[in-house]
Structure formats: C-alpha cells, structure tokens
Image (cartoon, rainbow, N blue to C red):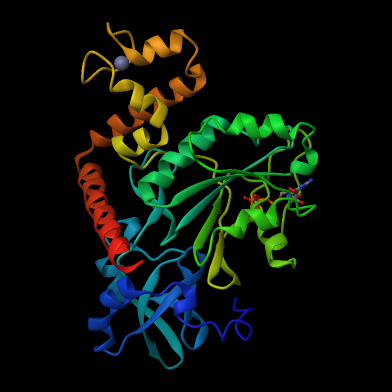
Length: 360
Ligand SMILES: Nc1nc2c(ncn2[C@@H]2O[C@H](COP(=O)(O)OP(=O)(O)OP(=O)(O)O)[C@@H](O)[C@H]2O)c(=O)[nH]1
Ligand SMILES: [Mg+2]
Ligand SMILES: [Zn+2]
C-alpha cells in the first residue's frame, strides 16, 4: 500500500498544498492533539495519508462513521484530514473544509453527490485521438460544466496525438468549448507534455475522462517512470477496460501534484444553472438578447439563440447538449435536499473566492 513511503518523506506540508486556509481550519484541532495530513490514495474506505512525517495507511474512526450523513461527508482523494495516532495506527477524525471539489451525481438512480477529487486547482479533461469514441465534444462540455461547479480550472487534453493524422483539424474541433485551453499531447512520444504542465505552477491537478484515453499513461510519462499500470484496449471499439480502480496522488516537482482517477462510465451532472451558463458562455451571452427573460430557447418568439442557430452561428449538437444539461439541472433542483446542498456549495464557492483574493 505504501510503496512510496521512504521516497516521499521529504515532502513538507506546504509542498502538499497546505496554506493559510487549511491552517485556519485546523488550528483549533491542533490544540486537541490532532495531526493534519492529505489523502494521497483512496480505495473504497481505505486510505493512505501524507503527513509532515511521511506517508501512512489510515482508517476512519467509529465516531466518523456515526456522524457521516451523506457520501460527500467521507474523505476522498485530495482531502485534508485531522487524525490521531494510536499505537502506530492513524485514525481519521475529521475532514477539513474543501476549497474545491470535482463531483458527479452518483451513478444509477440514486440522487447523491459523489466527490471524485477534492481541493483541486486544475482539471485535465482527457480525451484521445485514436479514432474511436474517445473523442467526444459533448462529453467534454459536460466535464467543463462540472469543473465550473467544483471551482477548478478546466484544461482539455487530447492524448494519443501520435495516432492522429490531422492535428490541426483535431485542435480546431476542440476549440468550440469557448476559452478553455486545448493541448495536443502523446504519452507515447512525449509530444506536448512540457507545454501542458508549463503554466500549472504549484497546483493539484486531477486527470479525468473515459477509460482508455491514457490518463495513467500520461502520469507515467510526466513522472518519467512506469509507476502506474496501464491497460490494453478492446480492439472492437477502442474503448478502455477500466484498468485503474483506485485514486492516487503523485508528486511531480515544485508542488505540482497529479491525481489519477478511474475512467467514468457515467457523468451525471452535479451542478447548478450558473455552472451550465459558464460552460456555454456563447449561448448564455446570446440568451441575454432573447425577448423573454425566462426564454427556454425552444421556439419562443424573439429568441436570439434560435436565430443564431438558424444562421449557423452556433453548432446544433452543442445547443442540444446545452438543453439536455439544463433539463438535468431542473430535475436535480426539483429535489429539495439536493437543492439545499447545492446552495451550500455556492456559498462555499463564494467563500473560497474571497479567500483566494486575500491569500493567493
Ligand atoms: N498510441 C498511444 N497509445 C497510448 C497513449 N497513451 C496511452 N496509450 C495506450 O492506451 C491504453 C490505455 O491507457 P491507460 O493509461 O491505461 O488509460 P486510462 O485513461 O488510465 O484508463 P482507465 O484507468 O481504465 O480509466 C494503453 O494501452 C496505453 O498504452 C498515447 O499517447 N499513444
Ligand atoms: Mg488509468
Ligand atoms: Zn431564447
């Protein structure tokens, strides 16, 4: 479980992303004798936590289980936790407030938030240019809305450029998603990798995207060693086989951390209306010109969105995806408890913006 233990002992809390925000959250707990650490590996409810003294396996206390009401209350990769040590075992007592979280609605019919990674600054949305179904603009739009909801900066990463005959066309095709940066890279040849991380600075980056696009291969290539097992593809449809089954955080250099996550089969929205608007700024800006303030853009008179659609100024697939996602949001909002949790997140987001203004 802790194969990196000796190697990572030199990493201090600051290099793990500890700052004034977490210090403020943690100081009352320090007086109670608790120890801070960051979750660097998560497999179901088994964790590895990195503290100032190195990497340790950790578990959740009975009291924690008792108090946890919803799935999002449990620690996840990237979380900062407060622990006590008892006979060499680290026990998690509390999860510190999250600055950001990339979440989805849990798969299936249940309506609950599942946090994919916490306290991340940047989200690499990875797709692959292998000619299969691993490049999907509608999926990318969905991930962008989710990044907006979680408070992380999205970056589109198109991997397997070595398999793509027309790079220019691939790049142009992905620019449709507004001002989100697009990088063409190859984990195999190393193309574009330096540029990809050039501007990241000291940050926590989560890699997400469908199975088989090369998230783990990219992390291996960036680390310069084969630390993670990567998978073979099914030849029939070029889709992945869900090789990665746990989440893990890797240290690159100078405070840059990469989180590997398993590919997602389903990405149910966990977001609010504003998040969709920020992922579709072209449509939401047009919508300001609609005659009715509550225009649904589905046939009302004086609709600026319909007009742009008819004139070919917006893509039909993109417009339809926008409507689908708005519909999902209305459904989520119709569930009162979900609404209250999303409202709480909006407040937290505002708080984190204020914190960033003052401290960063
Ligand atoms: N040609 C080529 N193959 C690649 C590249 N990156 C990854 N692959 C191959 O794609 C397959 C899937 O890579 P993984 O890194 O396991 O994909 P993943 O996104 O981590 O998949 P999950 O863990 O299942 O979510 C492997 O066979 C890799 O060798 C690339 O840049 N070029
Ligand atoms: Mg993987
Ligand atoms: Zn309209």
